[in-house]
Length: 317
Image (cartoon, rainbow, N blue to C red; front, side, top):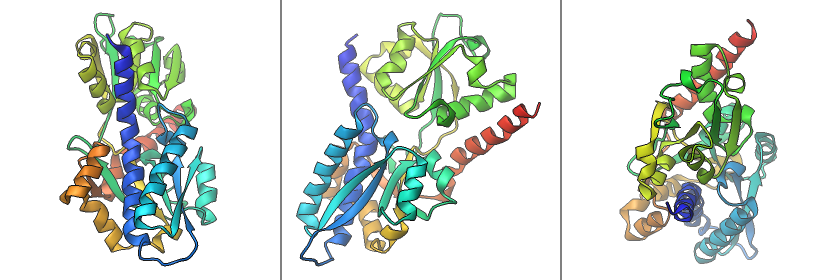
């Protein structure tokens, strides 16, 4: 198996999840910002979650985002200069938004659900990849190892795709809910070892090579690896899957809403209808951009709320 090819392909897949957001956001701003006249450049502050930069460093991600942003602003809104801020946790995000330091924020759907009642954020779009705006988590094991259900994973080693700590991993919240309902345990006591990794090559391949007993990853990333190496799908088996959920969304802040208008939103939603828009979308391998709807958050809300409820019940015993 050409693992270097697999790693490169998976890294490209991850980067397009987030690079499309940056590119499309900044393009949309150009439609609106170009209307403003100023002799001096003004900053347009864009906040990115640390979780956006998977498979590459924050420094490299910020540099790439800055170059791309400036190129777009040079052509469409020369009076504005994009500023990229990476927030490593929700506490920093709250401080930035509350003090009007950001115009726009990109963040994961679980993080948005956690802060949506505390901050004035206005979600307005989500991406469509491969014909679907939704993804799902899957629990994967190696075939022929005597592990064919969750019960047989007791005291086994698991690796989870995540760019956070164990207590804040959405994937572990999902599997914890199942474990608490079926076995009255959480992952911390059920598995002998839990490893988190933000590199997909360090999640699927260790199971493939029998270094770990199971992994949790999104279905899309698993499918990409399987396309690059068909042996993965023939030798690994899916034993649990989550409900579908949106991975990320883009929000205007209160400060950003003072600039945003219907024309900007329309520019997002109609990008795929023009040749120029199709070319831009193809760079990020997105099909199109669609409006955000509150019901898109329902499965995330269910998992997080259920996790809180089940842990409270478990701790009270």
